[in-house]
Amino acid sequence: MPDSSAIFRDDLLAGQVALVTGGGTGIGAAIALELGRLGAQVVIASRKQSHIEPAAAGMSELLGRPVTGLVCDIRDREAVDAVYKDLLARHERLDILVNNGGGQFFGPAETISGRGWDAVVGTNLTGTWNMVHGAHKAWMGRHGGRILNITMLTKRTFPGMAHSVSARAGVEALTRTLAVEWAGTGIRINCIAPGLVLSSGVATYPNGAQLFRQMQQHIPLKRAGSMDEIAWMTAFLASPAGDYITGQTFTVDGGKELWGDWWPIADPKGGLPEVEIPKWPWEA
Ligand SMILES: NC(=O)c1ccc[n+]([C@@H]2O[C@H](COP(=O)([O-])OP(=O)(O)OC[C@H]3O[C@@H](n4cnc5c(N)ncnc54)[C@H](OP(=O)(O)O)[C@@H]3O)[C@@H](O)[C@H]2O)c1
Image 1 (spheres, rainbow, N blue to C red):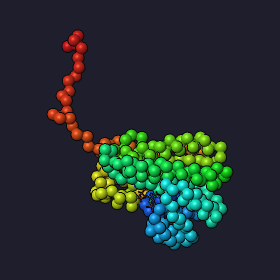
Image 2 (cartoon, helix red, strand yellow; image 1 turned 90 degrees about the vertical axis):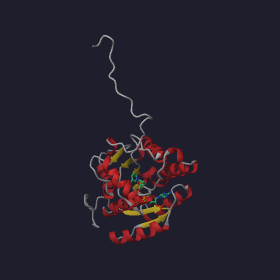
Image 3 (cartoon, rainbow, N blue to C red; image 1 turned 45 degrees about the vertical axis):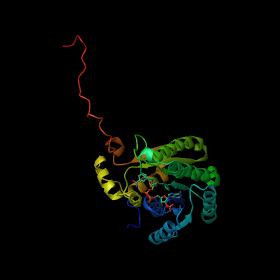
Image 4 (cartoon, protein in one colour; image 1 turned 135 degrees about the vertical axis):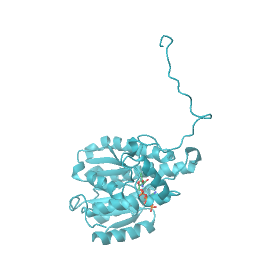
C-alpha cells in the first residue's frame, strides 16, 4: 500500500479538512486515504463503530497522523448535525465533503417492498440531502467548499436496482440545482458515477465475485475498475483542478454505460417475429 499518492502532488490538499461518509470501507476508505495522502485532515463517518474504529486507526497508522472516526447514520438529521458540531469543534473548518455512504440490494422491481424502497431512497437520496444541507448550515454556506457525491450509472437504465438508480438520479438532479443555488457561496458540487468497481461492496451481493466477473464482459475496457480510480477522480475534483467545474456528473466506468446489455429479456412466445422488408405496390 503506497504511503503517498500515485498521481498527485503530496501537499495538494494540505491544511484542508475532508469528511468522507462510508469512509471506513471500500471506495470510501480509498477516497479517505487518497485525500489524507494529499495532506488533508480526514474525518470518516458511518453507522457502524466496527467499520469506523479499525479504519480510523489503520489509516492513522498508514498516514502517520490522526484520522478521526465518527459514528453517524446519514438518515438521522440530528446525528448529522452532531457530526458537523463535533468535526468543527475538533478541526475548525470543513473544506471537502464526500457523500459516499450508501447502498442497496439487488432485486427485480416487483420484488422490492415498500420498506425496501424507503430504506434505499432514504439512505441514498435523503441521506445525501441531510449531509449537504447540514454542511451548508454548519460551515460551507458561509465559507464555501467542495462537495462530491458518489452515485451510480443513471443515464441509461439499471435493471435490478430500480430504487437506487431513482435515488441516484435524484442526487444528480439535486447536484445540478445546488450548483446553481449555492454558486454564490463558493460551493462547488459534483457527482462521480462509478461503474463496476471491485470493493468490499461486492460481497454484499449474492455470488458477488462471480457476478462481477461475468459483468466485465459487458465493459468495453473488459475489466472492473479499482477503488483508487474513483479516489483519483474525487481528489481531482476536490483540488484546485476542479475550480471551474460544478453541477456535473463524471462517469468512471471503462465505457460500460455506452455499451452492453446484460439484463435478460425473454423472447416473445413463438420466437422473434419474421422480418419482411416492406414494399409499396409500385416497387418491384
Ligand atoms: N462498488 C461498485 O461497483 C459501486 C458502483 C456504483 C456505486 N457504488 C456506490 O459507492 C459507494 C461505496 O460503495 P462500496 O462499493 O465501497 O461499498 P461498501 O463497502 O458497502 O460501502 C458503503 C458504505 O456506506 C456506509 N453506509 C451505508 N449506509 C449508511 C448510512 N445510512 N449512514 C452512513 N453510512 C452508511 C457503510 O458503512 P456502515 O455500514 O458502517 O454504515 C459503508 O462504509 C456506495 O454508495 C455504493 O452504492 C459502488
